[in-house]
Each structure stands twice: as C-alpha cells, then as structure tokens.
Image (cartoon, rainbow, N blue to C red; front, side, top):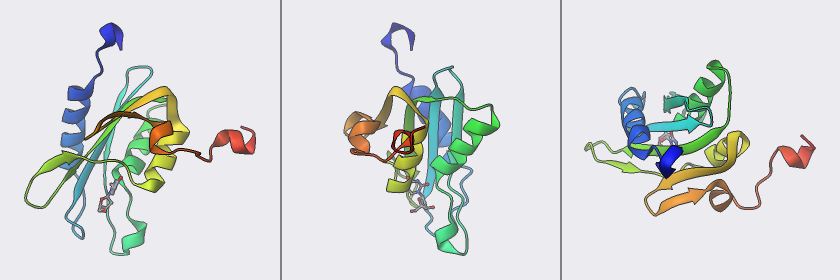
Amino acid sequence: MENNTAPWSQLEAAAAAALSKAYAPYSKFRVGAAALTTEGRLISGCNIENAAYGVTLCAECAMVGELFAGGGGKLQYFLCLGQLEDGAVALITPCGRCRQLLFEHRAPGMEVQTDTGVLSMEQLLPYAFGPNDISL
Ligand code: THU
C-alpha cells in the first residue's frame, strides 16, 4: 500500500460483513476472512458448515474461491475474525489447513494481522510444503 498504510480497518469491516453471512448452526462460531490482493482487490469469505461436520468449509476456503472466481491473484494482506455465540468478535489465526491454503496463494511478504501483531506466512507456517517442493 502507498504511504505504508496497511488496510486493516478495511479488512476488518469486510471480515465482519462476511461473518454475518456465515452458516454455522453446529459450532455457532461465525468466521469471516478478508484479504487484499496485490492488485488491490478486496475479497472475503465466511465459514459454511455441514451436517457431516468434517465437510465444513472454513471462511478461508470460501475466500480463496472468491479469489479465483474474480480472476485469481496473490494475497498481500489477510485477516480473519471469529464471533462467539455471545456476539464477541476477535481476530483469530487461521487453522492449520487454511495456513496451507494461504501459503499457496500468498504474495511475497504477505502480512497477516493477528492478536499478537502482524505475522508473515513463514512465521505462521514454518518449514511449509509448497509449490517449490513439486518443482512448480
Ligand atoms: N473456522 C474457519 O472458518 N476458519 C479457521 O481458520 C478456523 C475455523 C471455522 C470452521 C468451523 O465452522 C468453525 O470455525 C469452528 O471450528
């Protein structure tokens, strides 16, 4: 971003809007993920649960679907919000599977906002298996 201004408030608003659309009747834990691509495109997604619990789609999965539905790209900034049943909203760090998803589609230097500050994907998923490991 220009002027060194990271778009965290914009991403928080997008993630909050996304989590309000979550389908989470089982865990009752709503999640909204939002990212800005290197091209400045804002994408978001919510979690979509299933009666077969293991089939649940995390918010990040839906967000990556939107990334590709809109033409693809690389993620520059990302954050994820979770909402408890009592309404309390907080930043969450992505689950392990979603760290792998984010690793694949990250731009170099992608920043992830967490409750302990901004982290890199390399910090969130050290020693990651990625495209390089299969010579892509
Ligand atoms: N969840 C996400 O959407 N993203 C994460 O990174 C962590 C977990 C969802 C899955 C499930 O619907 C609910 O949160 C409780 O685990």
